[in-house]
Image (cartoon, rainbow, N blue to C red; front, side):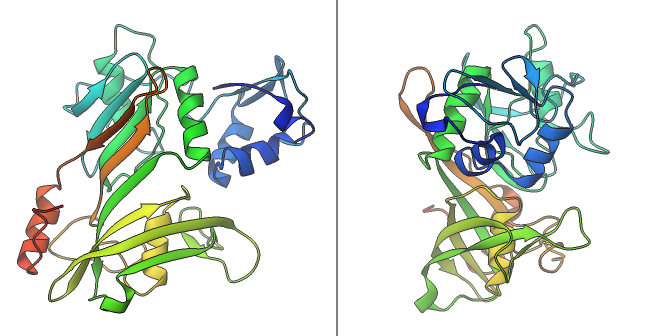
Length: 300
């Protein structure tokens, strides 16, 4: 990703730009710092303490960008594609990007095969957890990635999730905003938790109750920030963890993953400036679980 530094960023540190302007997670910033060409300012590798000046060129190479992705013929449902973006309905159980133990079974591998005749680089805009299904947006150029990143930073991208939660939410809590700080849980490399102090990154989630059944509540959740595991942490925090989430709740024998689906994504096309909305049908495992509990999602 290339960023041309304008007047508004003059005098700012790279760290502040990454944290407060691009709203990158600590994990993402850490991967940039550890990448050989992660943070390059005017052609030279720098640390996050470097001071930016108007006219500078900052280049960011994210995790797996520049790393060879092995093309694999894995079936995927492409909702839309052009030179700027690819929109995929990612199934549950498929990691978005390469990670330890997942080098040949990811969405990146599937797209590398689909675009095997091109100079493919995986640039996931909204990285869904492995067991979260739904609309996943991938930028097909550095320019596109930067523009879409700016949209996320300015909260112009609208993301809607269907989440099935343990327990029946009271009608008085049918429309709520959860806003607090989320930090890495001490002693864990994966888990996050709501911070009781001043450390952590601001996280904001809006949700509304869609329907309730005998045991569960279906909600429409709109994360306004993009913190790691944000929805999973937030719903566990209010006492209604996402059904089947073994990390922040309890296992459910009726579903083998967290019942979380990114069903709608709206963004402005980076080149044409057209506002586009894509929806992914609710997967069968969540439909079956909701139907068994008396919840009908047909009107979603």
